[in-house]
Amino acid sequence: MKLGVFDSGIGGLTVVKSLLSHNLFEEIVYFGDTARVPYGIKDKNTIVRYAIEAVEFFKNFELDLIIVACNTVSAYALEEMRENSTCPIIGVVDSGVLATVNALSEKNSNILILGTKATINSKAYEIGLHALGYKNLQTKATGLFVPIVEEEIYNGEILQAAFRHYFKEIEVPHAIILGCTHFPLISQEIQKYFGKDTLLIHSGDAIVEYLEREFSFPKRYKNPELKFFASENPEALRNVAKKWLNLV
Ligand code: DGL
Image 1 (tube, helix red, strand yellow):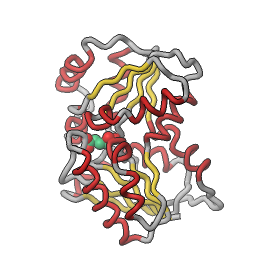
Image 2 (cartoon, rainbow, N blue to C red):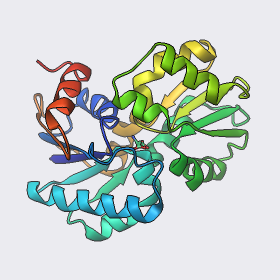
Image 3 (cartoon, rainbow, N blue to C red):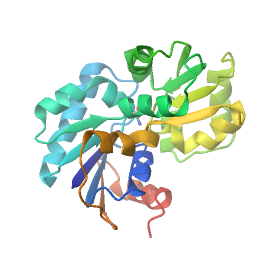
Image 4 (cartoon, rainbow, N blue to C red):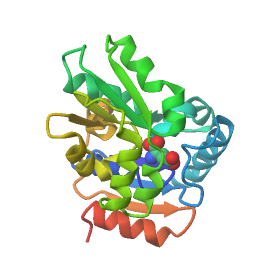
């Protein structure tokens, strides 16, 4: 099994991290569109165009599956990507919803959904969760977290200022969906801000369960080959990947 993983930048590495512990793939080809990140402030046409270009890039690798490890692209461009692809493509919003169902049996739980402006405007999570009976939802677009994470700022005053800016009127929820794959990189600080009683959920949490439900994996691969590509400064992406995925 050869897998492609696509994100606008480094955020999709949080999904790769979840995948690596399960040895499902022989090879993982990661592509981050670092020259054009962030996607979350762009309109649907632009997001779709960039996403189709990523599909074209992946055609160089004879992949068996592509995971769109970006909620923004998953919310807007999956259909168009599939029309242009020779292999199946899955997104992370469905697995984020699955992770929420797994973590929260109480349907009245107050859930705060965080994401980029585009993801929040798409209402992708709200639609998925409403259909399953979760009605007590708040949403907040927190797009500034994306460039902060791309700058490798994972704590400190700039992040705290962004928290104060976005969260000052938010009531403390039972759970927070990290509806952007960049956000798990600052999850420790989000947890500290809201306190330990708030449960944090991210789409990578259920990605393996989701994959095993949708596809069959007859073989396991102990040491998958990892290839990292970026539309700008691939070396920087590889360095972050090494750090984040504990690669030697
Ligand atoms: N990591 C992305 C997401 O999950 C995209 C962030 C962005 O490019 O704005 O939405």
